[in-house]
Structure formats: structure tokens, C-alpha cells
Length: 297
Image (cartoon, rainbow, N blue to C red; front, side, top):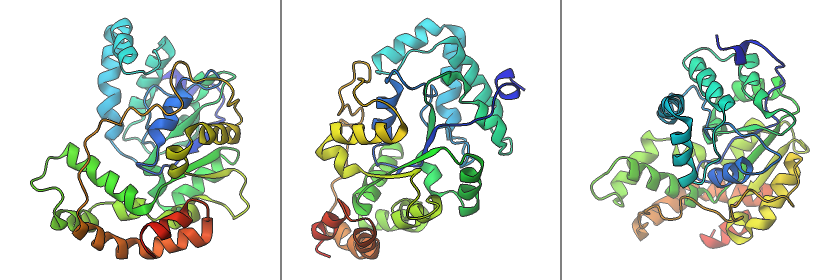
């Protein structure tokens, strides 16, 4: 077992961001990764609690590059506007890779955040939003002081953004066809990720749970400075300190191709998510009220 996982305190993360997928979590990671009060893992998504191998797709190549030449690895990261690796990050990658496919063990997971020193650190991984209820409850019980961050997004827009991401990864003939979208509804997890009220019920201990922070993607689009300030304040950091040289609205995904939603697909998706949209407006207010107007509900 790597020493990092066997020794030292097991306090765990200061916060866990559970998504939403396609809700601005990459923006948040970039802002925190370059902020002087944070130490963030060298890979955005740890995929520890959702038991996914997706972590290895980025971690294994990065680990090999860094072991071969950390200078070469950092030149790549400079070009990608990612923070530079240090020796502890290489050790961290080895430790997290060692954990892969082993049963969940909270103390080992907790020690992954010890490189933070006196800074803040956390885990940003959108698939955590839809882990089983009992697992979410166990995580909150083991780390009761960890802040939970949830970036909610209009369920239809969020679903469509996820669908576009999958189309980019797996080229499909006629991706805007209704039949393709219906297949994703049946076989994918897009509806689960757009079920905001279920996610909140799964992760929030009570309506007055002050360690649970619900934020909105809409606010990122409207006023990134304000949203950044509110999230950083919630996490106990100083929003007055800049995130390195990154602009507040830095978006590394803005050039990614989108599939145009047809009227036929929209007419299919609106009834599918109508109850969720109305329920979010009633339960959470704020930007969710505009979702109702947007779709004529």
C-alpha cells in the first residue's frame, strides 16, 4: 500500500462537489485549482464513490508522463491552463491508481487530501450525484463537516448538453434524430442526472442543512464573478484572491461542438421533464422559476 494511504490523519475532504454533470463543475475546478487557498487533486474527477474506471483514462497516462519527465508533463499542463505538477502529485496519482477496483475504504480515501497542508481541498465528481442513497448517506456520516456543492442546471438544457457530449465521444449517424434521443433516455443516465429534486433529497440532510450548497448554472452564465464569490465564501475561502491568471468566466469547453436540438426533440423532452421543472421552481425558486417560463409550463 502506498505510504500516503497508510499514514497520517484521515480528516478527508473539506468539500465534495456532486455535480451536476454539465452544470459548470469544470469551471469550478479550474477556479479552485488555481486559487492560492486550495490544493486540488491533479485529476478533476476522482470517481471513487461511483466505482468507475473512467479515472484511469486520464490518470494512468498522466502518471506515466510525470514519472518519465515531470517537466514535459508540466509543459503540456501549461498549454492546457492546468496547474503544474509537483512530486507530491505524482505520489498522489500512484496512490489513487492503487485504490482503483478496491472496495471503498473511507480512511484511505480521506488521506488522499492530506497534501493540502493548511489549504482547502475537495473532490469534484458529478457522477456522485446519482450514487445509491445509502452510499451518499454513509459519505455524509463519515465526513459530517464536508461541504456539499451542487450546481443545478435547467433539466432539459443539462440533458441535452450531456447528450451532445456523448455524441462527440461516440460518433452517431444523424445524432439529432428523435430515435437516438429516445434511446439515450431509455439506456443512459441522462434523466437521473436531470432529476434535481432526487439529488437534493439524496444528499441534503434537511432543508436547513447549512453544509449543503445549492447553486445554479444560470448564475454562472449571467454573472460568473458573483457565483464564484458565493461558492468560495461557502467553502471558507477568500473570493477576493484571484485564481492565478484565469479569468472568472474561463471556459475551456466553449469551442466544443453542439448538436442543434430539433423542434421534434424539444416537443419530446418538455413533457418528459415538465414535472421536474415545475417541482424545482416550487422547491427552490430563483433561476428555476425562469425554467417554467422558458418552456411554457
